[in-house]
Length: 294
Image 1 (cartoon, rainbow, N blue to C red):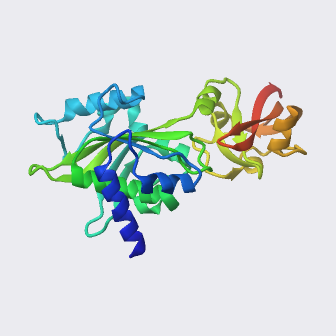
Image 2 (tube, rainbow, N blue to C red):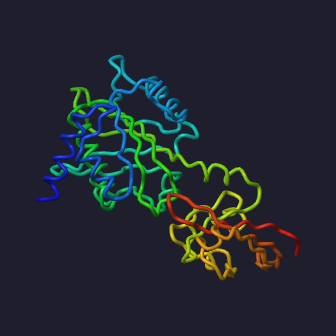
Image 3 (cartoon, helix red, strand yellow):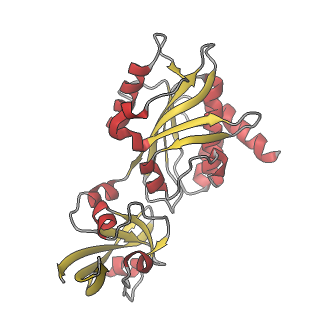
């Protein structure tokens, strides 16, 4: 009951909030978790939507909308959104409860978050994130307005911030029955690593993979790295470093080693370069792999 009251308090604050002011309870909730306060903008203009993918999504939604601008709750062909499909979420309220279920959860979101939330509830996000997201959807049910939001995820999610454009879906009576949303990650470090030709992995101090670029996923036949998968289990190689990421960062250390890996029954030689980088106040190993022969 206490948690339901807390959620309702946050719902009320979000429902009444307009930028740039952020309700104190919402701010305190995120600050206590070491994150900056989230941003919520109701009925945003294109100028206020800072991400080009969100603007593209908004434009497609306007094409699919009825004459009054509302998005129908009838079946929507997600193929209309092209490559944006992997960042789309579909959300519906759970009847009789202050909770919401994800009926569609894009593969890109699942890979970045480390978990597919299809069929799961918004309240299953732990801590302040579950309270915020569930309360936000509750406020949207009350307001029936489009919302743009930006918030920081927990420390263990390799994303600097999630940016969302959430559109209510309504029935013929004008009642909001669910939401269609685009949820994209904003991450300067990740974007740079994704452009690299060589396989790159970001690994935590306890040698768990938190990110692998497309080249790494292809090399090790891992279309979607599971969150917290062990480096040696995923690659068959040992990380083989004697310093913590923080020590390597402080000492500007870079370590090279030659490793052997087996792909398609062929033994290949790789140069593995391990350095360190800081991200959201945490130091990580950055592992770059270069094929040098068989």
